[in-house]
Length: 398
View 1: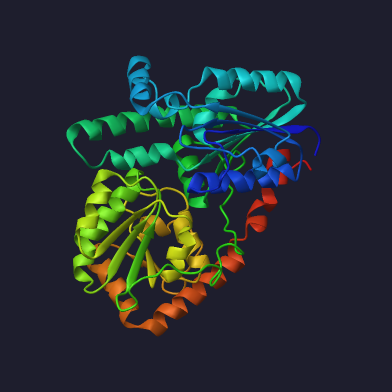
View 2: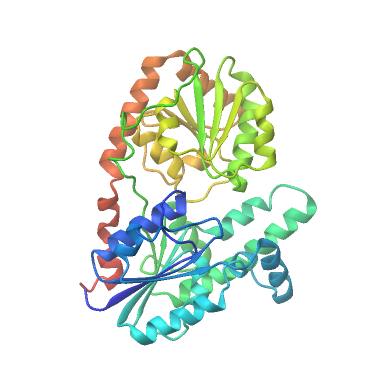
């Protein structure tokens, strides 16, 4: 491949310790095999990148700028301009200037923008530079889903955000040479709503590190073996995860006697921490290695009622050979056969019954976990998922 690549990201891709960063890191590694990659990214105040990190070795050049805007200031800017708060949150003039400088100084033939908000930093006129827009998920649809519940103010605010963000997404997709989504389900939804064809909107699916997420790779946490352990993992200040654990804890768990529900993930909010008052529930906060909790769990649940794209938490648990019970929203976009590779449940009664069946039938649970691991091996190795990147970058011409 001729030329070099500029990789833009709304969060620094390393360490790959959350869903979006797992994807961005693995895509960045795949791009670096094709050409020198110049990385320009925003960095959250809580993020730190060690000087000896693999990111420094991988990138031909590295520009990391602090994200200076708070959610409050982004919302105020959006109100003043009539724009999307999600876009305003990642508006950073220094990053726009850095992109222009890199394009002027380096032989950039391709721009790979990771997450829709990064489109605002890509110049309108690129001459011969090919622009790839990786939306990951259709975020406007997520806000549209949020607009279906909550109080009057939150419903109105989320519906407005959905409308403004969708307009931004469509404009970005029309400028881009190719737009990518994490699953064919997401890509098909965007094609239908944006009126774009398959030649412009494609799926580039996530993978899973099958060596890292393998059964028996880590020591499990110490737990009460007499009580079945149910696990949820995720970023616990993320609204869909908060809603999921609250719903499971308050509605489903009372129908699962004797089990302990672990919520393992960083930054739990007050409402998540409050769940620890229930004797059946343990809220861990950030843990050194979520694999130790997955290894210890009898089963993993993904009871998300609002979900977009592919849930890495589900892929990780399945790769580690754990039986998974997921909502239809959490399972959507994952190539797995319900009933064979995972259980898909909808509603309180269905979810509780599915979990109780696996707790009571250990042979069934083991068989489900083995099938899950086999499906991950067949379908979700990162190298296989990234095989189409060269063709996407070239537009099919190489």
